[in-house]
Length: 67
Image 1 (cartoon, helix red, strand yellow):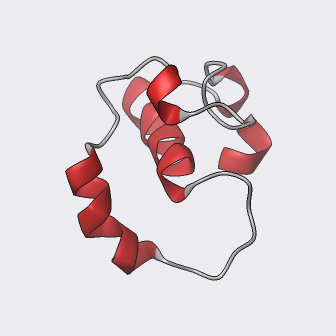
Image 2 (cartoon, rainbow, N blue to C red):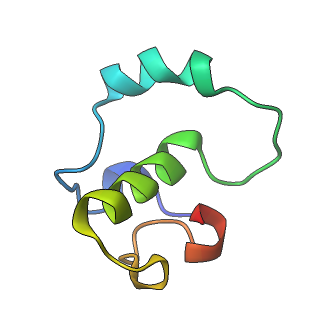
């Protein structure tokens, strides 16, 4: 699993402060190797850039996980 600090930052990424505010609102019971931040930033990347799920850059979780 790649650390978010090691991947390229995109303009669609939310700041750590924004994620601290959002996380309690989005908390669900789940068992995942990926953090909510990783998946959330990947979704925001696709929405902002109009890309395809399968074309996510390598630093994000697998497209099937994000989708």
